[in-house]
Image 1 (cartoon, rainbow, N blue to C red):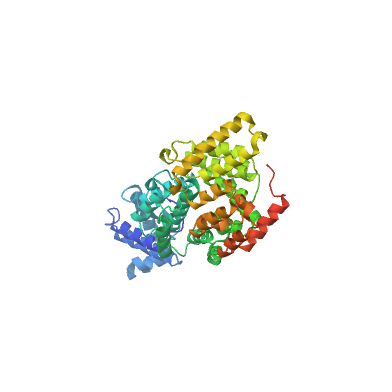
Image 2 (image 1 turned 120 degrees about the horizontal axis):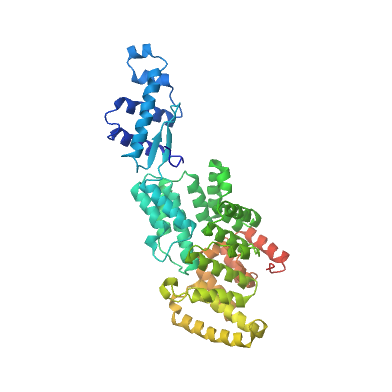
Length: 470
């Protein structure tokens, strides 16, 4: 009765074996326990025993002379399998690791039990991560579920890279969707745990590579992905973290191929769809609109993320009135952050200012009056909450005011404080007007943003005449 047949660490297998031997089911079956231990230890040593080898271990010298081929062992192995099934249906029903002995063989099989407390936490965390459901409260999200899994079984190594991945997504969610520049130390503490507990797993290598990429530690990221490739080249080649690395190194096509392949495998996962759309946006591909339009939108968070990203794409294509319409709908969402003002108000003011500058061309007289009225409300509210406006948002405010020097100063401050925008500095379309500014170029060099990123993005801008087609 196999559970989830992933590779189970030896320490967990031996823990599970000890609990089986001490259980009510096996306590009076010493011979069966001995056979099981021989099979388990032989399998872990990659030398599964034969019936004859087991017979030599468990039978007396006299009995073995009369049964050298282990015929009696086969009978006892049948009873052992029945006892294992009884254990899994009874007192071992919620054990993390199940040990099985398939018919006709003495090579044990180890698997994770989906009904265990640890795997239930893992499943809930995966579901939350897939749907981008972190909610307004930290303790209800995927990170919380991963911590609970680790608390239930600290030796469960797959939980550590998963915890860091969830923490990383949580940080990005806080920064980009909520506008918080300091979302806490959840990523740092989870990262430290993983470094101590799960350095050799491929998932650890992939997540570490992604984190190093976001931290602009390009050499460390490259080494992490090389290590992952040595473990499992196929899995590494399909990782979104590796896709992010390729994207920021200027290999847009390879990155989009990876995110597109993930979307084909998981068409109902909005988080994968949003990731693919973000890759397309940074690569200035108009197809991103279609990808976002097809979002399942299972949650309010997904809908907000989709609207924000679509608004930024409209901003890039200079269709500011459409950007305002979308961004304003999020701004007016009274459930967002408990009804507080929207932290992305800087981008909204920028787009609204641009739409007013265009005047009657798109808005008409009535729409122009409404836009001017809204602008006063946005600006006044922003002034009243200016102490909470981070530097990334202030950059947009200075851009709206036409003050490029102060916009770059605000951008520099945000980047030096570790804002994730810094890793893709040459790729963000809303920064195109500053690409040739000497201070922007110096900032990119100071942050060690890859020159390949600049070259690839400039090639894209040139080939598209400065804009992608809608």
